[in-house]
Image (cartoon, rainbow, N blue to C red; front, top):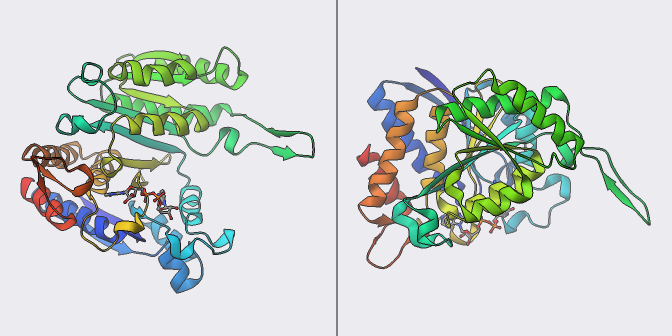
Length: 352
Ligand code: NAD
């Protein structure tokens, strides 16, 4: 397969971790005879420095022309005091909306080797966790009509049928690549928009008869995530509920440097990035954990290119390297072997 990939390294540890992810991608593509062409573009603080614009047109255009985008992270104290329209984070919003990415995937994976980092009891987490939160990203209350006067304020939560259908369809497709169980989270006992959401999930479920579907109210879902997280495989929900639940789910795994994410649209183009930020406190020191970005590349192979075996090969390599006891300093514990960013990348390449 031929792939054209846009690389947005970004700021802080962005270049350190993206470089390792690229090495891993090259290694797996070598093994399976895929050809990759990279287009490196600037966004965030690096683009402000060069073009006085966090998201230059050329960056967005290049990303649109590519098959997929790998992003490190943007931002840092150097740009904290710039005008709000020039903030590095504007680049992320601009890329998501410019590429029409309405579906956010946040897996919460807890590796058994890192059990100690999980704040939950052993009997609750068992052999590890692997939950996928599918969040609607471009509609709902964050984008509704809003207003404020001296004595009141309001925000509007509304969803159109087509907006719900496209995210629910994605969620069914994702669940079918995973454990074939989909939990839809809403507040249908109170909200009209949730009742529509629930009806659509039920209607669409007849087209996916191999997938087990259930519904939870969001308050119950928040509780179940810490009481019995192993009941979940794939969760689909609205923008705000997904924002909150995906953060909760990621924290039960206890390790910010390990968690990848993806933002998808209706075609195959996606943007893949770690959930963490640019960690300016550890930039350029060869200590950042590259695994979240490396696992983002595995997600890209699975969700944008349908290369399931190649994706699993990367995930297995990460598992094996952790099993051999290698750790970057953020996940280091006594009795394990501390390695730097580059060494972690090399070990994962070797394991592939
Ligand atoms: P952060 O995620 O960058 O860092 C939080 C803590 O986690 C820090 O102690 C950091 O050293 C550590 N950490 C993060 N990633 C790590 C990794 N891969 N390996 C080891 N340790 C890691 O969050 P923050 O400090 O709140 O934000 C720093 C900057 O990043 C800010 O400018 C913020 O706006 C930006 N940010 C960007 C994104 C993004 O690009 N998607 C997301 C969040 C924050």
